[in-house]
Picture 1 (spheres, rainbow, N blue to C red):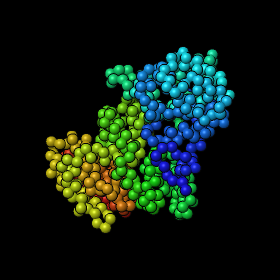
Picture 2: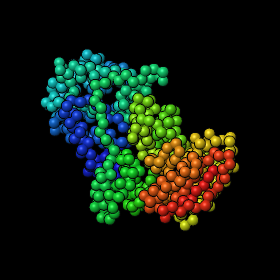
Picture 3: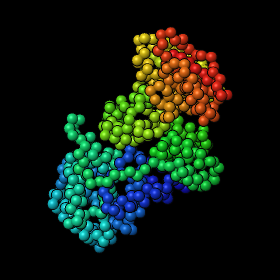
Picture 4: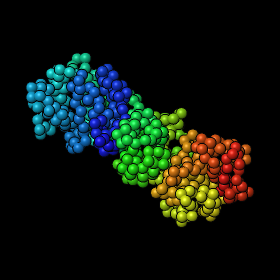
Length: 518
């Protein structure tokens, strides 16, 4: 029976997969036009699986070489000559199962013997030309894990050689199409091998056409995959609802989709809202290669980290500009996406992971310690006593932050302060995320998921009574959308005459609002 897979290439006969036929058809048309291009996506975004599917789809029409630079020693990319040799040896390995009378295989056996260390540029061009002349079908080359070679100038020069042959293709035969796959875009490979003050963005492969294919998994695609799983296991559940919910949390990130399904299957959770929330919680608590890589990137690129913090904690609207270095890097690693001209965190799971990560760096703070101390007071029969939680938050907040002295810090970090208090209270059992439509400099709605229950807390800066009343109406609209009876509001107020603490409950359109001013 098939399984959900999060390790290595997904195979249709072994693993539950979302149908990617539409994606493959777009790529097939690009190859038919002779396009050279890069498939650049974050870690575990289905690049290798896509390449394997492309190879199978194209094999009847083209001679396809699918190779990978993974595991190739860096010494092979010290210069162009050694990179040329490494490339030919990988082609030879890929051709080893061809018939003995295959002319392309025979030539590769001759020019790329085991132990070959270097091939100069002129010989390399001649060999590629002869390979293309001998092949009965046009040659397409798929190169996976190009990042493995990206630390070296030799690889950049190797790409320049492919570029030269492409530009001269009317005079001398060359590869029909070359597809590179990796995390780093070619123009950004120099981020790995150049100093910060050196020019970084001149591409040695500017012949590549844009690859704008959406590789995220759609809600319908996820639902169709779950329908197959449901039939195989003789289960009954609403795969459309579950598929949409998984999509809402993951934005279709392939690893996250498969991992949630894998957890539900392995832990025998119900395929419903509560089961998905349990799986999301389990996912966010585990260590995995994707989250490990995210942490590494935040350390490697401090500007990226600062920008992400300003978005999730400060409510800052960062206008999307592809040529902004930090945004460009964030897009490349799939941390963010463009939405309505603004830079948004790519998905709820990433956002919650980022909250947890940054808050974990602040565990020694007083507000975190108060949350750790108070946490056993708030949960009764599986429900969070939000009224008491807000009351205690007000007390601790006023103990720590002095009016008039910490106002700017609080205005910039109010969301972080509340979430830092909340985190140890729900840690290990619940999670939270921000409603993207309400995150701005003055207002954010926090959605808390805890043991199948949801709570909405609006965090905002106090801007006067009329603004507060508009906020109340907006919060009621969200309560109606989530079918919840009670909502909560925390206002950070900097008036010298403010009265801190809980206010009398507000009844509005049949909903109850519990408000606190700090």
